Amino acid sequence: MTEPTNISETSLGRTAARGAALSFGGQVSKIVVQLLGLIVLSRLLGPEQYGLIAMVTAIIGVGELLRDFGLSSAALQAKVLTHRQQSNLFWINTGIGLALGAVVAACSGVISAFYDRPELRVIALSLSVTFLMSGFSTQFRVRLNRNLRFGSLALIDVAAQLMGIGVAVVGALAGWEYHALIAQVIVQSATVAVAGPVVSRWWPGLPRRGHDMGHLLRFGGNVVATQLVAYVSRNVDSVLIGARFGSVSLGLYDRAFQIFTSPLNQIQAPATSVALPILRRLDEDDDRYSAFLLRGQAILMHVLLAAFALAWANATWLMNTVFGAQWVPAVPYLQVLLIAGAAQVASYATYWVFLSKGLPGSNLRFTLVSRAFTVAFIVAGSLVSPIAVAWGFALGSIVSWPLGLWWISRVTSAPTGAMFWSGFRAVVTYSICAATAYLMPLEDLIDAGALVAVCRAGVFAVCLAVVCGLSARVRSDIRSVISTVHLVRAKRAGTVG
Image (tube, rainbow, N blue to C red; front, side):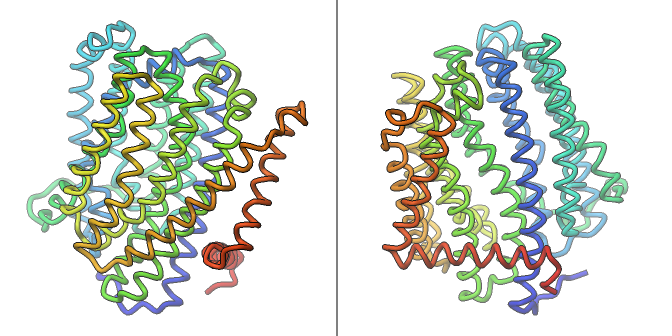
């Protein structure tokens, strides 16, 4: 059945609010569970164990993109998706997952030899089974997403994380070392695979030729090519650090990387799931498209940048008190990578434009150019030190933001000027607040580390209030975010339609 196109502003607001309420509510739960697991396991396992896992995942993680082949995005953006089409997509995803698992298992010895670490063979062999499970579960997740069952998706993900973390904690306490982290990944993937068909109440038919699959495969091909380029640029740093500086340096870098990417990934993915179908429907109405895009960008930036800025100002306390003294050497990595994260948040709305305008090919070309800069900066940094690698990643992320806006200005009518200044205001605002809180000599006045962190947060809040008082544009941006939060709350309370 074709989805209606004559959707009113109020209806779109209700749809976005309902999706945002369920998606972000679920993501908050996932972030809390993920961070709690990260904290507990960080105190039970050290940089060496995490570094060994990161050595393998930095290489085989590319298989996860190939396993999906962009078909989840293709299915999500399709205005009409028949049962036969989705059944074919299921078998394609599952078949690719099976093939990739076999390839990873066959290459486990090569991975071990590359790093000259015999234990990596067992890690690669063990993780190879997750490709089949992930391929199997892909279209069940798409089914839930297209049916707007965001709460069910969140429930599956949270349950899977809880089970994976529970097994990992038991394993770490039992002395399994890095095998505990392997068990976590496998149990989490298996839980999602089992829950998918049960919760979605859908089962694919047998694969059949035809059924107009060409446009889905072409869209997916462009998406996966773009993701592959992005993946290489995001993981070449881990490969180089592991190969040149060892597992401990990689473990420290990887811990810092996970702290900033965990909330980033958990919020960006559902934000795209909510924003993309709405933007597709508004594609022919430039004013409404621009208004929705700018509001979505403002929400994403103010929520994430506030969290990143607070983490940056309290990085030492965060590592020492929350994760344990063994992770304090990761503080410089974390502060540099949080800068990279801010730049990535600023540029994420550009990705929405590419997909909602149906321009995956243009997005691929942009990604090839922008990521080439990132890889060059990272390689140059690897000649110096691990922290220089982090700076290379950050510099590449910073360059990609204005480059992306310039690129979409050439191929779309998106409000790139407004997008830049909205992002620039948010970056400057939270940078000022973070720097002010960080530079306050609170340690000279207060002995308790936790109290120092609380005081820094207070200074941060006061500084933000001052900036809002001085800038009408910043006040307007934050009011837009607050009004959306009120809309979401109203929907959850049942007061909106």
